[in-house]
Every structure is written in structure tokens, then in C-alpha cells.
Length: 303
Image (cartoon, rainbow, N blue to C red; front, side, top):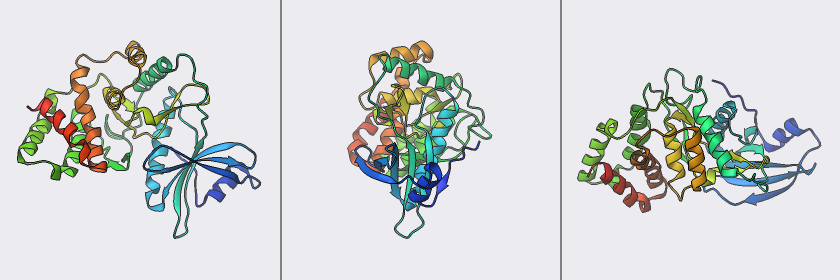
């Protein structure tokens, strides 16, 4: 699977190639939101606007991986993402990496916004994943990132081994210093008996991978657009579980999703186990404030 994205050695070269010699940046407005990258609304000399994310030169991989994820979602032809203009990385010693995207004003949501969002997400989850995972059904064409943490996407034939080996196990290993011997014994039991708690999906699904309220926006068509993916092929339940982790979406979203893609029985009992991955990631990235939530979930499955 190849998703070519133009790549440039400077923002100036990018603008010249994309818009012509006469187009320059007239104004750059810093945007709020996000704790990993800097974000800007760039107003160009022709009064059009584009969106720019930037980071240190060493973190250029954030943007090339994001572009692959956005392109994979777009390839399903189910739910919109901002159009990718290019990525880039300046060559000077104090350089930076960047990603340029279509600008979404987010001002005019459609009246059935949440229901439309749910139906389109369900369609993405039902779309063919052929070509996204070489030599396997679950995983992705390359490793990527979950926030600023690395995310392994090694191909697996089955979902539960993938979730154990590529999601929970690496996070537990990174967080080992937070746990005592009793905790570690429970973690080993949980990983060894994951088949007792999870189920294989009816079909593999392309997932956004980090679907909380900060990772979608209202696009220029008034519908939800997906941004900042940690994309991979997995069980659709993992995306839905993530939407419930930090406050949840409106009830109409979940009712509409069920209409389009009914959940397998027992999802409510599996939800916290999917979200254990994200809480462990937060524990590893942001510190001990998440430890009590992690331990609560472990205790739920391994008393």
C-alpha cells in the first residue's frame, strides 16, 4: 500500500510548488489545542487559508505517519478528512518539520451532525481493509504513533493476539516501574488469559485509533472530519470504547452507530479492557495520575 504525499525542504518551497511563485504567507495565527505539535492557521497572500502543524525536525515521523493514516481513512470513501497538501522538513540546523492540510472553518454543522458522524464511522468500520495490512488481517502497513508514543502495528492473523502483543504488552513493559510484584503477577495473568475477556471481530476494520473529542472537527461540509489518527486495522469496538473514555459522545451517536453496525454482545464488559491501552499510554506519557485508573481496570478483570 502506497500513499504518496509531497514532501518539501522548506515551507517556502512547499507554497511555491503548491500555489505558485506569487503566493506567500500573509499572516500566521497560532491555534490552541493539542499538547504535542504547534498548530497555525496560515492566511496566504491570495487570502486563502491553510492549516499547518509543526514540530522539531527530529519528529518529522509524526507527520509522515499521520499522512499515511489520513490517506488510509480517505481511501475508504466513507468519512471525510482534511485534504493533505504536503509534509516537509527544513534542512537547516535549527529546522522544523511540518504538515500542511486543508483548513476547516467548523462553523456550520449539519442538523443531524452526530447521527451522520456515527453512520459514516460505521461505514468506515465496515469498509474493506484489503491492502492495509501486508501478510495479515490485523495491524497496519507501518508502525505509527499514539500521541507522542510509538505504536507497533506488526501484522497478526487474529485480533486478540495483536491486541495483547502490540497494544497492552508494550505499554505494560514501559510502565513496569509503577507496579509491585502482586500487580505484575496480575498483569501476567491478564495477558495470558486475554481470550477469556475479548472476542474476535466478525470482520477486521480500519480504525482511527485515537478517537476522542479532540480528534475530530466540523469540516467545511458541516460534517465531522477525522484528524490526528493513530490508524490501524483492528476490532471496531476499540474505536467506540475510546469515544467513551473521556466523557463520551451524545447518546444519539451511539444509537445511530448501532443502527448501522450492531455491536457484538458483551461489548460493555470488554470496553474497559480496550481503554486500558489508552490509560497505560497516558500513564507512560504523562505520569502517575493515571495509575489508579489502570489498577482499577486490572482488578476488574483479575481480582
